[in-house]
Image (cartoon, one colour):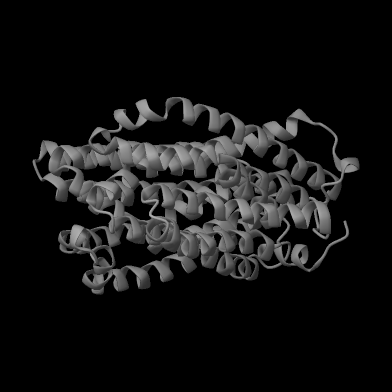
Length: 456
């Protein structure tokens, strides 16, 4: 199989591959989350109600994004396994199947969300801010295609080690959004609808750039030519076997957020939802090193698995956790020490001034959640890389929807600890679940190595 520099990199030393892949991924993810933070900051200037509306829409938005990232992971896994097995023809064909699936799924999601948007928001407890939530959400989901397809195409780029093309369009989308936010919201006086339009336009422009590389410039390692396509329903299945569970993982996380929002609404009302919305976005930024390293591990694990180099698979899992944990400790300390200063960015207007101390208190508690992420994220992504997306999904569901939710409810309501108890329950459940996830990937890799030794 003819290789280029990128393919040589991902098929070589797993540690070097993770280092080279993860840094651009983390940088692009940082821009995405910075963009989300800036959305919250600008919307916070409109008052607590529009910010709370953003919090109610966010879980639905993350479900959509989760489908994009999930299918991207599915395509990434399948393509990288073919590259590891040195089967470029099948890798090309898998990339085209991946793109076709992205079109189909974007149409389905658009129809479903626009049809059931209002009852979903009411069910989530957004009745008090329904007008704001509908104004924002309708625009977002009408532009599903532009938001959903880029991470799926980016998964194919990551599979071939072309991290520049996987990350530059995502970064571009975030930068465009950041520029358009204040213009649309305040200069054009579009309010919360302006934030939605800014969020939609940036990714659409980045998608046009990706299509330019693939169909006009045609200088990608993977070929998307018609002659490379041979319809194979097994490839759709193989992508979905990883992609659907990976997508459902985000659904689980979003449903968890819905339940947390609902519990907080009962305990303290919309103000606590606004605090959680703003503070959790900061915590999400702290998770970026672990998530970025884990995303890089999908390609590296897929190549190692396809080549049957199971020792490299073990190196990938352990090194990913090690690097992510070191970075997460540093980030956790920074968030704890500078919580008050960080919280001020959400209280620059008279309407939101009272949120600052509440957000600071939230950050000093929930920054500890970041320390658990390297174990769960690395384990889940390695499982996805080897094509075992269902295992990753069940582990995530057990961690987030069983352990986190149960402990949050017990401490928040059964033990009458209120808002503080909900946060402590999330920490306890997340910590236990993440360690269980990592133990499972170690057991799985040991089983692969023993099976190969017995076969010899």
